Structures are given as C-alpha cells and as structure tokens.
Image 1 (tube, helix red, strand yellow):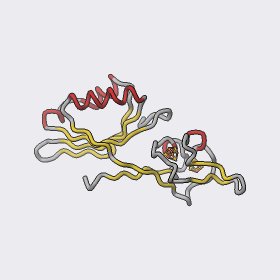
Image 2 (cartoon, protein in one colour):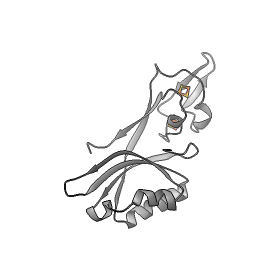
Image 3 (cartoon, helix red, strand yellow):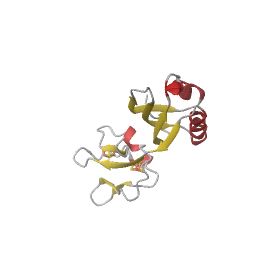
Length: 146
Ligand code: SF4
Ligand code: SF4
C-alpha cells in the first residue's frame, strides 16, 4: 500500500543508467528498509536509461538509509517540490484530517464549525491526503517538465 499513514512522505525523482535499470532496486528498498513507495511516473528511454518519480514514505532514519542505498547504486536523486491543495467543493468537513495536521494548517473554525485550510501553514507532509475519504486534499507535484 502506498505511503504509511504514520510517516510523512517525500516525492523524489530518480535517474539511472541502463545497468541500474535492470536491478530490482525498488524491491530491495522496500525489503531492506522500512519504507513504502508509490511509483507516480516511470519512463525508460530508447537507450534503456531510466527515470522514475516516486513517493517515498517511512521513518526519517530509514528514509536517509534508503536514499544512501539508492545513491550507492549510482542513481541520481532530486527532491521534487510538491504542494497540497484542497478541493473545496469535495470537502465534507468531517474532521478526519485534523489530528494529523501538526502545523494546524487544517483547523476547526469555531464560529462556522467548518474545517478550514490555511495553505500558508501547510508543510506538504502529505498525511491528510492519505486519510481524506473524498480525496479533497491533493498533492500537486512540480516535475520541471520531466
Ligand atoms: S478529511 Fe477531507 S473531507 Fe474531511 S475535513 Fe479533511 S479535507 Fe475535508
Ligand atoms: S499536507 Fe499540509 S494540510 Fe495536510 S497534514 Fe500535512 S501540513 Fe497539514
């Protein structure tokens, strides 16, 4: 299952050579480290070089070990910027996301009893996107045209 509910996730871009693209590196990443991943985009060029954009999630320590493992395999890693938006029409103000939002970008407005979203406080950790029952919270990624 993509992404752990307990841990924040990051979106990263991986570039690797023909030799590396034949290795089962993503399986190793999940098996050796306590990480889960979700492949958002994958492409192999005619020269069999690979490019992938993945969402990686897990405890910070394992996350760093996992990244080191990928770099040792000769993979070039870039963090992809992401931001979170909310589809205001979809949100049903159920409050499921509230306790997960540590910077309180999602909060209960007492007067209206509605769940409000302050994008300026959002750190794009992605926790809310994994629990929202109607997918109102959405990840936008900037791949720089890749
Ligand atoms: S979980 Fe989704 S639907 Fe519920 S309040 Fe949060 S954003 Fe709205
Ligand atoms: S992505 Fe933003 S709004 Fe969602 S839980 Fe993280 S900080 Fe809060």
